[in-house]
Length: 70
Image (cartoon, rainbow, N blue to C red; front, side, top):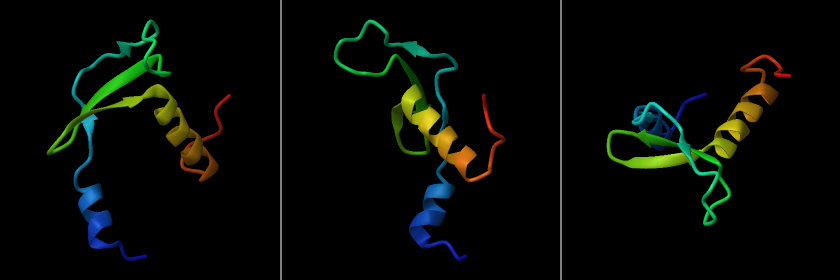
């Protein structure tokens, strides 16, 4: 399967953890995320919630990329 230019560009611009820790948002009444991770790619700083990370992990598990988790 050949990747499009947009897909190739996205894969070459991977995000990494900017802050090696978890931002505890359990007291935040403005969002539904309890934990937020701060990331940075080549051009942006942004955050991703634990819910999104777990959704990605569940998808990877369904695809057979990771073993079943308890």
